[in-house]
Length: 382
Image 1 (cartoon, rainbow, N blue to C red):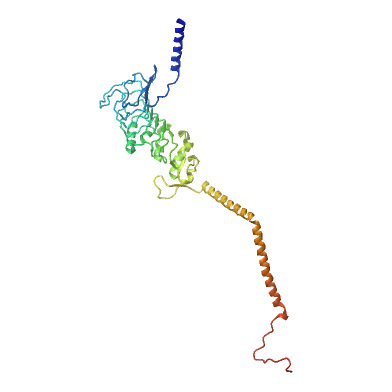
Image 2 (image 1 turned 90 degrees about the horizontal axis):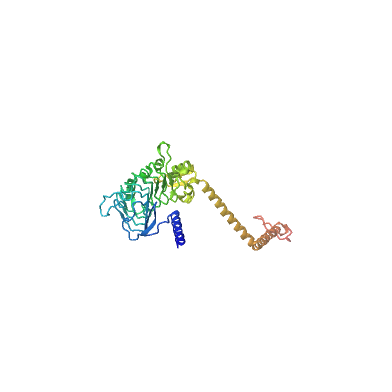
């Protein structure tokens, strides 16, 4: 029995070691998961969860809530606030460094919603239909380095973007900001003012270009490198307004890792053409009455040459078809030419016969008698 017990104990230790050595699995949907350096990943049902869970141990390092119905994140929601207006709360999760709150139907984030999380370095609020964001929503996150708001700002409108500018201002340590899929028509000014920002993700938005002010804001004083910019899958308008962006891209290609994926959405002549393949000197506005972004057109160049080539190919095709028609109807054409030649010959023979008749003096008509002379018969003897 003793050897068997020892064998079972050894197997148990091996299983525990294997479990600890494997990376934690992602949290299943409609669950909340938490883990720490001495805790195995645990998961509990979160489908009916309407406020942050209270059973997270104080030494947890990461917390993931997916598929819940949080709707409103009140002040100090993760620091022991009761969710009924009591905002006085202490530090309940002092070691929490990563908080993921995706797909939780969050619509409102109040001021101080993340108070009491002094060690939080990564916050993910992506895929939530945010409508309102407090200007002090992130005020209690002095160590925050990564903030993800992808597909979270679409329903809020301009007021939410103004609130976002206010909420981003105190995040002095922020390194990574994700704003993909939010239908943004401009870059948030507060994001461009973050001194330590290293990467700004604005893919899948509604940016038609970057203005001179935005490009200047991307360049920092003192020669410090500005943030990397992910800009792909935006409806860029490639015209005169794109000249500053094109020049900036060519001087700082390493700052835009997806620069080769940038393609034109307008004008129609340049649809889906890579932005970096354009010649900045040839980009011009179509007319002086264009809007601020400019109604663009590229001067006659490769497109015009392509039009001439296409026109030549069409003419060549028409000529080839004409020659094929002639070849297929060669017998009829020969018959028609023969009939035409015979008709011409008959006509010329008629002209020739009449000419011979007129040239024979014996067949020429007698000249008319002069006026006043008397006609005499042959036998009159006169």
